[in-house]
Length: 502
Image (cartoon, rainbow, N blue to C red):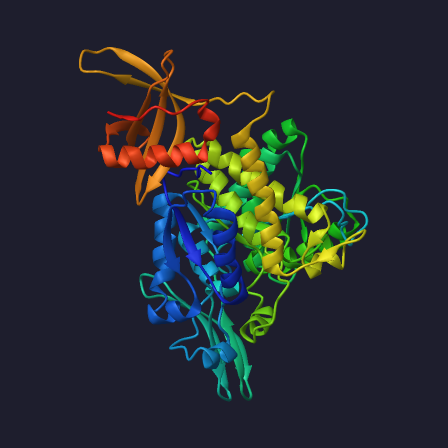
């Protein structure tokens, strides 16, 4: 089977525990057999983050800025128990929080709908997308343990040395204190991203906070959203027939439960973290929610919205088979591959991303799924292990791709046309009928459209968006032609002629 080519690598961020195990399985079973996968790899597993002083997380974010598209596995944000378990040097901050801050992006999360699984909330008829602010709050906090009696103060020192102080608490004994912050610029980027996304989907936008209690911090969010809406988006929203409104977070929760869905719910960082998990579970499973971080300058990082599935990982370490749902992680890969294909103009890669999602959902619709979904299934379901589920998805992909390769009486294969020019300036057209990889080099089999149907084997050389073709040695040409003959027998009615190398 001819693997689908890539020209620009994805940023690949590996992760922790059970999702790290599934990550490797997905690559082995669903990606590498079908795609000539190109990635720039970063190990964000907790041990390696600790070894590098968390520099690897920063490096992965910078790589995302450079390459434009990333795919991330779920990672551990350590607590005190993890400090001991992994013998950490420091209680490292959330890698997601670090990446979000460096990209200044907004996280959009939406449930994956599967046939045969209805939302727990009976009124929901359409997905609800959570827009989660990707900066600040407790994910960028500073906190300390207060050992005993004393005063905790909030202090701001201006550039001219002027201090502003507010008492947080007069402690009579031990306790804890925490400082969080946000930036007007980041809040404004969040607001614009939400308004633009709502317009692109033509869906209503809700924003919720708690300004009745947080009369400065949350009120700043409220005011910035309203100002940007009034000055920049009100007319466009009214023309599109959609609405924006602000309400308190507790009122928003009540409205969401009574709604039919089909809107975008914008939340502050912590609220979005919690509410996205609630929505995912109510729509089916925590493993059935997509998550994409979008930066203001159009960089994308795809991941699953759930965590590392620690409980299943401990069972896996004991040698027990697990039935962990890999769907959201599969969709993280498909989303990244689709975006990479769109940016690079690779239609085959986009089509494969669509096929990967269709094969996953068709497998579930066919009654084969992990235990979390089997409990929600409206009919007879076969609860299988994670590996068995991935094998079933892989088989569907393989069948679809083999059918596409074989074709049928009604199928018309539209091969890429390559025009070559000889030393005298004469041009000849060829159909690019097969691609092959040898290490990092890509080769192509070209079939002339003349009556003789001559064959050329060439090496593909990519420079940005352009591709040129170079001659290859006879041994390489023979090797690739033999592979082509074995993989594509439909091209040979009689004995094949020997390939020419140009």
